[in-house]
Length: 353
Image (tube, rainbow, N blue to C red; front, side, top):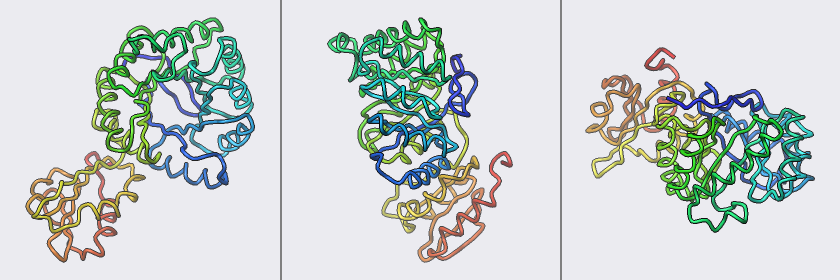
């Protein structure tokens, strides 16, 4: 059971309370693209299941650009601020859904206070982002990193409570899985503020997904966490796909396609990897809660994947589509992808959704 946390409204969505655990990512390119092109790319992420998009704001002059995006997108836009508190103040002149600050590099306490006062007046929530690698100077040499992260969070709490500001989300992240888990467990035990989960600086795709999956699963299965980001040295789309799959595997999400595929072997007669590469981009926007199987040969095709809502394998020159362990359609390999998508669109799923 999820631990009860305060609900925080971010744009038109809610983090915490009884809201489902949300998935978010971060824009990874410099802010020099045509904003209309950025909007198109963000809409693709939204279709794939992204709930929030965060943009780093390097300078005050970039606030207007972020403000334009926030006003143009239906997905809530979060402004990520480092070093200069004045950038946060400038961003809050626009329709920003949330401000993220890191107390380790925002500077003196009075600067954080200025941000809190402006956020309260503008009714804009704040995410206090505590990173194990960028703690306040006086905490950086502590041996217990998780404990130091808690101390940094509690310092910010003193400022927040001074101004009776509860419209806040916390994150306590480290590139070390154990520290991330320990810090979030302790914070969740003490406080009811919603938590944004993730492992920071987790690495490239495979390594990063492994670290995040271990940390996030450990916390989510204890009822901890209200929103997640799978930080990867990869595309934002990969982060969203990984995040949704972690939630699904933890039993916290059933929206969208669950893809099952065999690892292939010397019996393989169907190009599993090639087929998935062609089909996968077309699956990510489908919200039906279906289990789809892509198998490499008749041995582990209809038989081993009979519990899937729909599956496909090959028999040399042809592909066969099966349902409930029975073949329902046979097509050429060239037609396989289109035919399989057609059958997915016909499929109602396990509960007629």
